[in-house]
Length: 332
Image (tube, rainbow, N blue to C red; front, top):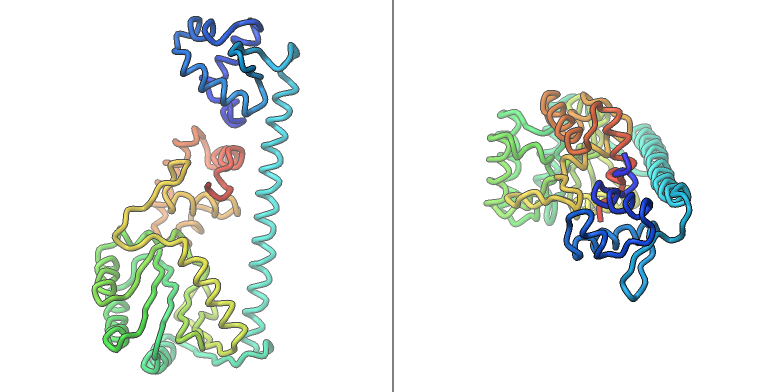
């Protein structure tokens, strides 16, 4: 469990030897533990950064002072508690921001925001209005496409709308979920967009389905759980500017289609990081599956892989260990 405090098994062994024999030098530690002096030196550097040992310029190594290790452990625990407190503040801030966003969206639908809002009911009305609006686009369209794998008829409908725009030189940027990389038809459609000079990136999760057209209006669903039930077309400089800023932030974090998904300094894929972030927000595996656009079975597989990496025996323990080790904080 000391690994959660940043003290791996090798460092723990060195530190225990020093506690038992306070006057041992680096060379003696290497001999007793069967390691090279370079390895011991690297371990001592880690212990020094944790304020558990002090190294002088001559080379001998001793504990900071001959006292019990509780003081050092308290310092490490305090650091972990500070990280957890920062994480809790981050989660609370996210909840507050989400509540504010939902309030503003409700205000938009009721027409009380000062922005002009059109309300659309049913999938046919939505498709008709999208066709009208996209037919007038001159410069740019930006899209959040959550939901993972798409139905064949929806993809065919999208082709008929997207091709004319791309052929007349409209800049098209689309953000999909990472999960489309495992769905043949949706991935083929994304590559088709790319072949016509559309730009495609993927991210672990997206906040809402959204289309921004020429930075003048945006289409958003009324019900985030059922995008086909109804939608609003929002006009208004302040609202559109905020939605464009949201798009640019998430776009900057996306992985270009065709590029391998990069591992962070913890060895996690973007999808695994996304899973942990949602887990930290208290979502169930089923809710996380929906946000990631994957099946419940796939979500369980991701959870199992993360539990193995964390050495956890349960989902709850995985969440605790991920928080303790800083995995829920932004990667460096």
